[in-house]
Image (cartoon, rainbow, N blue to C red; front, side, top):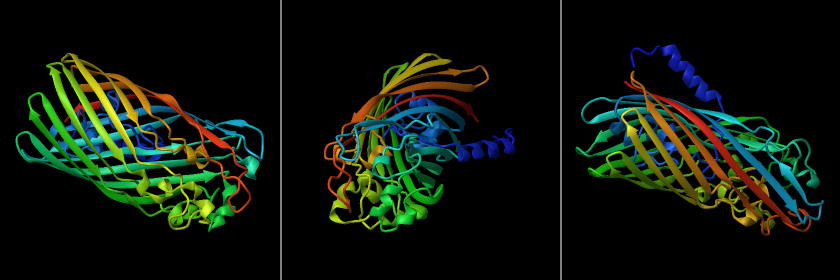
Amino acid sequence: MRNRPMPLWFAVIALCMAVSPASATDGYFADGYGTQSKGMAGVAIAFPTDSLAVATNPASAFAVGDRFDFDADYFHPSRSSSILGNGFGPDQSFNGNSLDAFVIPEIGITHRLSEDWAVGLALFGNGGLDTAYKSNPYRRFGATGTAGVDLQQLFISPTLAYRLTSTSSIGISANIADERFKARGIGVFAGFSQDPAAVSNNGRVSSFGYGLRVGLLDQLTPWLAAGASWQSTTYAGGFNRYKGLFAGSGGFDIPSTYGVGFAVTAQPNIDIALDVRRILYSQIDAVGDNFQLLLAARPLGSNNGPGFGWQDTTSVKLGINYKIDPSWQVRAGYGYTTEPIPRSQTFLNILAPGTIQHQLTAGGSWLTARGLDVSVYGLYALPDTVKGAGSIPAGFPPAGFGGGEADIKLSEIAIGIGFGWKL
């Protein structure tokens, strides 16, 4: 590490701060962290392969040793929606891809301080969502201009790990979050807000947040490892310029998660890993509260007011890694996530169609003669549509939008490359 010039470190960190972390594969959370993990559908709780594994399980800091990783992904989501059977206009479909691709970098570093202690640092995009409609889906209700939202969540996670026994370790990370958000073209909802001026077209706003992640990793036998990880709610300051949109006067904390993982060495050169993770979206009012609370005369922005109506999700990830020889590895994975958006909640989620359920991944790594680890991966998230059912409120103001249904659809592809060095 002493041989790497400090200006390079500052430049890379600045790049991570500047580029949009807008991934949305597990709801609006990223499916995984680190190129090798992503090639196995994001498994990492019990199968750490690089320094970015601390973003999933902080106990990994001791297991991976002294290492530095820099990764970059090209992420291409395809978002669309339809409004059907609505009293304010004909059936119509909308393309939300005016901004259709993103570059997402991430950095990790781990270092063993002694036989029992290790430290780490990870910078990564926890998740995000972006839609950009040239043709505004809400125009028939009185909206003007283009429509969309942009949510970004960048995490910086300093980590400390301790070796409990010769086979097990425990770790803790501080989650320091930078949330950024903007919305445009949804001023039609101002009439249903307790603060009409703080709903739309107020530019980008940032919010600082903090939380914790803890993890445990144990090599139970020579062929079986197990791990567990829990992430607290990340408490953020809220988006004051959008306090008329989000429940609780702009509050937008990041939900807690927990998960378990297992890794089996089926053959000396074959590893199979399984992660199960739960994301508690419903605990965050702005995300989890039901949009139809408008019908109960609760305005947007109020305490326990209307939200996006997301429900908690469970994701199951299965990955396999095959070591061809000491220099080459290949891997593949499959991930499944339960649907976060109920059919009754699709109307507002035209802005946030985080509907992905099935993901397929593949990747490989090459260890050069000089010790540089070069990894690549690809992801295809199969198209998923949520068809509305009782989704658009009928009747007249204060909560009438003419009835009918809103359907939302999302698919994704991503490719990434990562570079790792043993320090």
